[in-house]
Amino acid sequence: MMQKGSTRAVTFDLWDCLFVDDSDEPKRKAAGLPPKRVARRDLAHEYLSRHHAVSRECSDLAYDVSEAAFNKVWHDQYVTWTVRDRYEVLMAGLGKRIPEPDLSELIKRHETMELDYRPDPAPGALAALRALKDVYPLVVISDAINSPGWALAELLRGAGMHNCFDAFIFSDELGRSKPAPEAFAAAAAAVGCGVGELVHVGDRPHNDVGGPHAVGARAVLLTVVKQRPLEDHHPDAVCDDYAKLPGILAQIDAQEHKP
Image 1 (cartoon, helix red, strand yellow):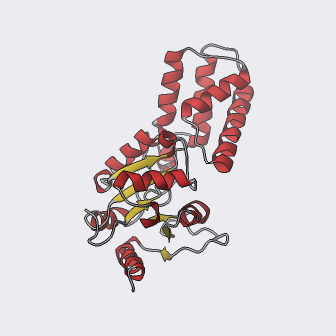
Image 2 (cartoon, rainbow, N blue to C red):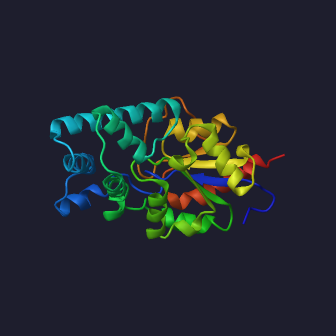
């Protein structure tokens, strides 16, 4: 439920905020598996080779080009292609197609890779969410790069976090990613408050401080997992320990309601 006298909601980034990005890599290594970057290229070559004589060098080059195109659109236009979009670009670059059943299987294996060996929750994140969920509406705003929104939701379920949230804004489903204003507007609309009444919690100054500030929202820079250069952004607060977050949010709210 909403805090009495306030329509503010609290939004959270996911990677290096709720989960430690790439903390699944040591688990993969212990299981004798390659890093995800290599495994994704393994998949592309495996499925292309079922139907075409394509060298690994050629397949990797096509993957690298499609990934660079994805990153360009993501960083510059704040648009997140789906995994299917990315493979469509890869195949168009090669001038080759694979049958739909195999393409769907390839996409599914790519999308579920982070569910096979799951990343670790950020220290203290679950306890903080449980402390906050009856005080503020909570929303996830997350870019979906290799794991789509439905897979990220499954990660949250597995970590016991999913039921702490009132709404989920995933960039592959929305079509826009942070710091685009539409990401924050969608979160506000989902819980029925004004976009300027959000407090966003995240680890990237450009996306998670600059993005909310551009729409008049507040921003808490989370340094629990990583500390990044501020790049001339000025968060309303910095949180280095999830146990401090409820108090930080209460302080921001008290400052906002001072006469």
